[in-house]
Amino acid sequence: MRWENLTGEGEHGRAADAALFGADSVTTRTFDTPEFRGITFHEVRARSVLNRVPGASRMPFEWTVNPYRGCTHACVYCFARKTHSYLDLDTGLGFDTQIVVKVNAPEVLRRQLASRRWQGEHVAMGTNVDCYQRAEGRYQLMPGIIAALTEHANPFSILTKGTLILRDLDLLVRAAQVTDVGISVSVGFLDAELWRTVEPGTPAPERRLDVVRTLGEHGLGCGVLMAPVIPFLSDHPAQLRATVRAIAAAGATSVTPLTLHLRPGAREWFTAWLGRHHPHLVRRYERLYAEGAYAPKWYQRRITRQVHELAEEYGIGPTRAGLARRISPAEPPAVAEPTQLTLI
Ligand code: SF4
Image (tube, rainbow, N blue to C red):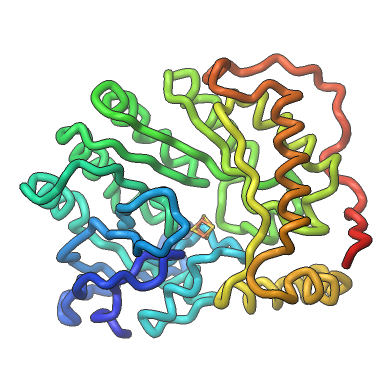
């Protein structure tokens, strides 16, 4: 394993900062409990946890903290899979089961935030892998991280699929009293069968929406990243409607759709999954993603427009943040026939 190469963060590629770990500082552990069976944890002591996002990145933030690498949530499409290859780890099953844990992340962050060179910029978390994945239940790094940010009144944001974030509700409420705290939960669709196969390690979409609701009830406005919208599997208008409606009912402050993208690492793993579970779609995917990692612009625009129209219809927006909406149960079914895309 190339620990000296553990420098970059997720979708931003490899950062240019110095190596974070010494090869002699890795402790490998397994836990014989049902939730961690088959998972190997590589505990490392990081030299730095504040990672600067490369300037060329399309991300709307400059600094990230990621206490974990790899993710037991095991989403088949996960764009961060590629980053495991930087460590000579497998980007398929290895990404789901070989988890790097920066066990000293809270203390290193506290030290870095106190540095005179640190300007108090926004820190984004959950942008590479999920900081509230199952491992966090055991390692409990986030309470210390949130506490450090709160002590320095340093603005931050968290993106997660993990219901475990509610464990830290009190800490988040306290943080929001002294600094800007942005929280987003990722819910791309409601289809239970699709969820079980494509996001097998995550809490169910409904449980994630419960998180949105609970955060709102405690005064923490929460947006939903509707990601990914999966072509031919979760993009039918009836499915989009059911999802946006549920997001609105949970009291989300915003909904941002994101169409599935398939970069190297994720693409191979997802395509193999597609061949096993939906072989009739393989050719259609080859055509839709013929140009590269992204679906065509016209497709992305169509999804965005549909979701924005639905968001408008259901009244999602900051003016009603945190208020669970009373929406009639008489709605179209969540599961419908696959969309017919005539242009591909
Ligand atoms: S929860 Fe996020 S980081 Fe984890 S596997 Fe899924 S997409 Fe990747």
